[in-house]
Amino acid sequence: MHVKILLKCAFGEDLSEETMDFEHEGKVEQKTLAHVLRTTFHECINRLTDPHIVIFPFLADIYITSREREILRNCQRLRNFLLQIVQKRRSVNLKQNDSHGDLLGILLEDENFNGDDRMIVDECLTFFFAGSQTSSAAAQNLILMLIKHPEIRDNILAELDTMLI
Image (cartoon, rainbow, N blue to C red; front, side, top):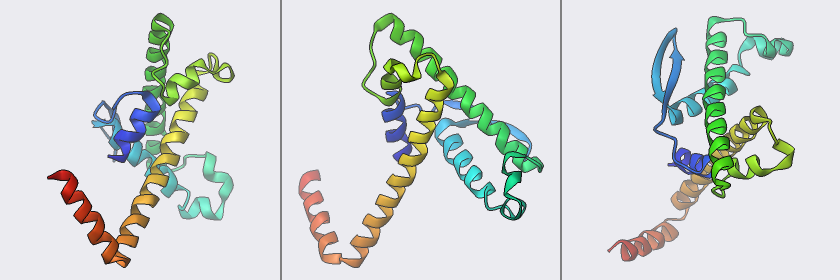
């Protein structure tokens, strides 16, 4: 659900079920954009804790192992996929002069991003990753508070029951 909301806010449409190439253990398969975003982000973060990068931080920009090169290829595929979305939307916006009110539409109209589709992809990815971390933390905190305060949880559930009936 978080991914759908974030993609809708970023691109003005739910792209979570769009499929693209994703490589795992040397095999390329079609996976949903939601899966590719989550998995690629997770792998990039985990890579920073690999022993050779922790001990020798200058190796962070060098993809030594086959697993690291696979992560890099997945990042490049993801960026190219999003770049195509930006370019498609740019051509639609030029014809219709319509921003849709989402992040991509705003960036396409912003003079600071004029013609720099790669920078727009960077901003959309940053928005997605920051939003996914914020949403996850908020959901975790909510669950923790509801566990610690069962009386509030019961009040919320009772209110939901009246709304859903």
